[in-house]
Length: 283
Ligand code: DGL
Image 1 (cartoon, rainbow, N blue to C red):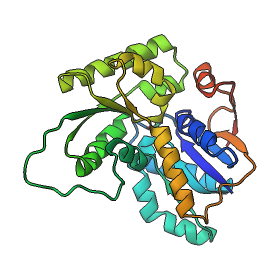
Image 2: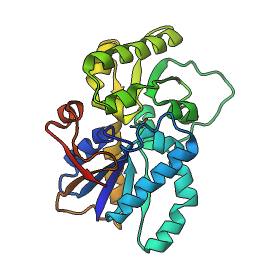
Image 3: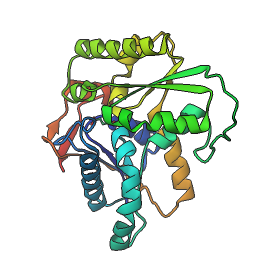
Image 4: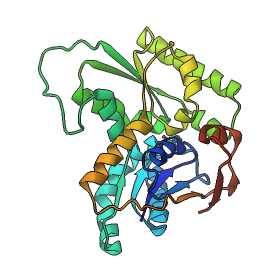
C-alpha cells in the first residue's frame, strides 16, 4: 500500500516533505484539492464533504492510511468522518482503513504531554506564564480546538489564536514574498496587540504557513520558537506504524502527486519550498 497525504492545496507539502525524509522507502500519494482550495472560509458541512471525497480518492489509489495534512480538515471533518463514515468504509473495503490528523500530534508537541494526559482540574488559579500564538484559518480558529485541547492539558499555557482569512489563498496562488510579508506582519502585530506583548512561542496552525515559515520568523520576535507541525506529525506516524503493523507503508519509495485542479508544474513558491520543480498529475 501507500500512505495518502491530503490537503486543500500545496500546504500539506510541508508535512509531506518531512514524512518522505523520515520514511524514505515508504510509498506516498499526495492529493491536493486545488479545485476547491481554500477550505478555511467554507462552512463546516462543505469541509466535511470535500475531505471525505479526498479520502475516497486516496483509498482508490491504494492508500489504507490517509493523513489529513490540513488543520482545517483535521479540526472540522476528522472526528465526524471517523465516527460516522469510516466504519462503513472499512466494512466495504474489507481491509484496515484509517484517517488521521495533524492537530493531535501538534498539541502533544506543544504541551509536551501525550494526548491521553488531561490535567486534573484543581480549583486554584494557575498563572499562565507561557503565551502561545497560533496562526490558523478562520474555520480552524472558529473551532477553538487549540484553546480547548491545550487548556485541558496545560493550564499554565495561554493560547491566542489569530485567524488569517486570506493568507492560505494567497500562498496557494503563488503570491510574492513582499505581499505575504505584509499580510503576516499584520497578523503578528494584531496578535501581539491582543496579548499585550510578544508571544513566547507560536504554532503555524495551517500547513500552508509552514511553506513560508521564513516570513513568519522574520515577523515574530527574533528567536521565537515555533512548534513544528511536520516534525510532530512524522513522530506520530512512526509510533502509529509501530503500534499498527497492519498498515504497510510500502517500500518502493513511490511518490505520486495528484491535484483536482490544473495539472502541471506548481508555482515558484511551492518549488522553492520543495527544492525543485514539482509536477502534479490530474486526480
Ligand atoms: N493547509 C490547510 C490548513 O492547514 C488549509 C488551508 C485552506 O484551505 O484554507 O488549514
